[in-house]
Length: 112
Image 1 (cartoon, rainbow, N blue to C red):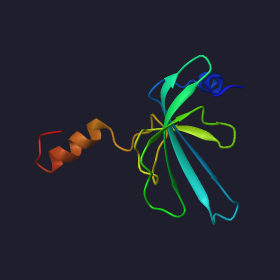
Image 2 (cartoon, rainbow, N blue to C red):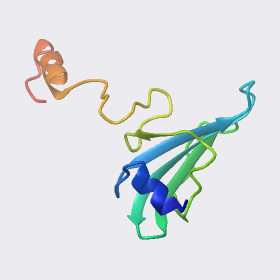
Image 3 (cartoon, rainbow, N blue to C red):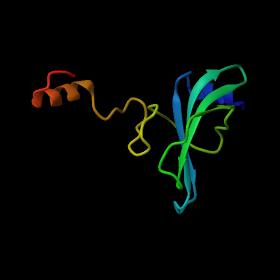
């Protein structure tokens, strides 16, 4: 199956970001890749790709990739630019705007 077809099967749309992790069973090496869908054609998918791994504590600069294979990792949709630790699937925000507003009111700050 072509990458573009897999994107459609996963329900991905331009702007969606997915994250996949690979590594060994012992956890001695790992790599996490994030792909943000930039363009989806009939046969081709174009991504902004970045990754972090066991040798670095920073995400790489984004680069454009075409037809990244989606075969070798379990992918999940994430909030773009979320930190590696605590990244949550889309729809599971850590705090709602209402919660933030209540916290600000208790602090005497009425701006939200």
